[in-house]
Length: 351
Image (cartoon, rainbow, N blue to C red):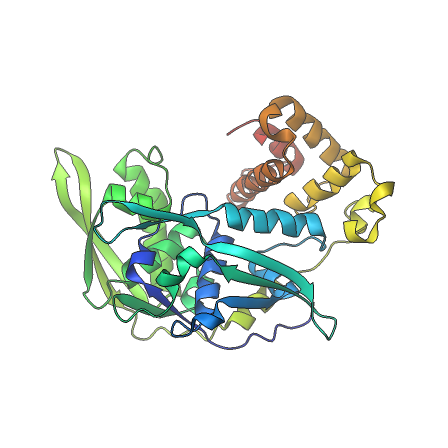
C-alpha cells in the first residue's frame, strides 16, 4: 500500500451538546471516523461538509484488511447510515435523534485514484458548523492512539471539562454516554475493573490529560455519582499525525488463505458466481480471511442452524461474524485459545 499523504496534525472542534451523544453500537473504528470527519471540516464554513478520503486511507481507518469489492463498501456505509446519534435538546429533557451521515460516494478521480466521500446529514449541520460558544477542541492524535471505544469516549467526556478541572456525573449517565447498555456491568466493582481503570491507564499513557475519580454520592452501599479530577499531562507530546496512524495499520493481503479468496468480486463475472459463493466471499472479509474455505463453509452452515433469524440478511450476518471475530481476538490476546476455528465454532449462536 502506498504511504498515506495525510500527514497533517488535525484538530477536532466539537460542540458540547454533540459530545453528550449516545453511542450505543458504534465501533471504535466508527468513533475514530467520526472524530476524523470533524477534524477535516472547517466549523466556520458549512461548504466543507463533504469530506473525501483516499480509498486505501479509508480502509486503514476502518481497519479493513480484505480486498476491495462493492459488497464490503455497501455493508460498511449501510452500517454508518444505520447508526443513530442521540443528542440532548436545549432543555436537557428530550433528545434529538438522527443518522449523522446522509450520503456516501465511492468513485474514481481524474487521475484514476479511488476515493470515498462522506456528507453529513442536514439535521446534523447545526451541531457541526457556525457555533460561537459552548464547544471544546482537542488534537486528533489523542483519539487515534486510544484502542477502545470506552477509552475514546471517556477522553472526550472528560476533555470537555478540562478547564474546569473536574466533572461530576452519575454512573447511569456515564454508561449511557459511553454507549454501554443498561444491563452491562450491573455491579460497580465490575464497571470499575472493566471500564474505569483501563480508561484511566490509557488516558494517562496515551493522551494529553489524566484523571482520578472518587464516589461523589452513594445511596446505601451503591455508588450513584462519580467525581472525576482532570489534570493535564504537561510533558506528554505525541507526533502522531493522521497519515502516521494510517501507515501504522500497514494493510497487507495474505495470498495463501484460500484459492477463491484470491479473487475480487469486482473482477468476477457476477453471472458466473452462485449466490452461495458470493456470500462466502463476502463473509470471508467479515473474518478477515482468518479461516480456510472449508472452515468457512462449516461456520456458515452452523450459522444457518443457530442464527436462522439473521442468516438471510447479508449485512446482519456480516456484522455478527465481525463481532464474533472481535471476541475471538480478545480471548486470543489473553492466551485462552488453543484452536481459533474451534473457538469460533463455539461462539456461533451466542449473543
